[in-house]
Length: 412
Image 1 (cartoon, rainbow, N blue to C red):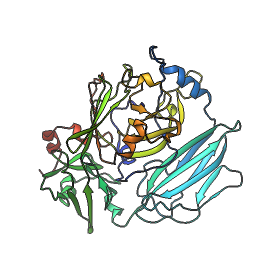
Image 2: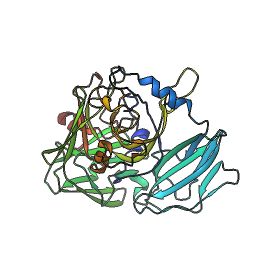
Image 3: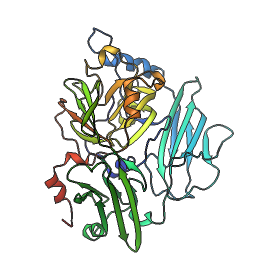
Image 4: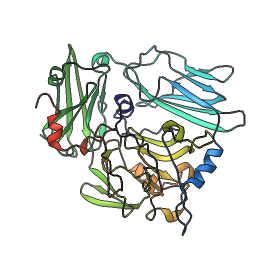
């Protein structure tokens, strides 16, 4: 039930969610967040639970270098985790594709950690860290980084990843590590095609990001091929489109309908953004999945008068990112049962009933998490939000009408 009210995410923010990684299940994490709790039969009191959580916030501050979403990281570049006002208690670094844990060394004073050797090329890593302050209050942080490959030395970063299977809403995204002065030449050297025969067109959001998609969602079961020939670098990437799943959140009825391959398979009560912080309307795409995610108001400037974060929830369960600016669909264990399907209480995210720790697979949030994949579409309608969701805010490409999309191409 949490989001940041930033309307236009820059390339750096977008880059953090553009890896076509399946079922990312990292523990920890830091993101934008706000919480609320409503007791049955009473009006919403969103700040009450937030104050309680914030009072227990740790003074320890974790910093991961390079930061969340970094790509083209050199295999010998310094990767480290540091903490101020506390000590690190646990750090894990894992290769996403293989699940292999990378050995590392914690400093004698517990304030820093680094991997023991150089990293592998063209590999996506997740770093999860835990720390405690002098009062024993814990906090967590995480970052996902991608190392450089020879083929990526010029093009920057391409998603989704080669060999992956994604949902019908996943666009092809090329994020360049430097501004492109001649868009037409570069776009002409990138060809995206589908075995479904759908026409695929590119769209430049800025000089550093070029996305490709068809007019309508990809056909389920099709294969998408991306061929690049840039400055003598040739690269071919293929990925599969899985089943079709589109979940529609109705902020007015406070229900979410999950449709798979044209058939409704689940209707779930939800709680979306409050009147003060309404959820975006529009078509969004799941870009990351976290079984637990640390959400802290300080990351988006939401602070209390005493200088503490307005909220600090260490392990929000079953969180799936919908926008780069911080909109998630996730489990909510702090809200009363009467909230779901009845009251919109969040700062912009979509909350589903869950339990603390997320260990009950029968909860609605757990069910959705287990039955969703990167690239699935989530549509929000009837929210009180009057602004327009920027199509480059995460993978919200489908919010842009087709005529405007084609107009953003240099070759069509």
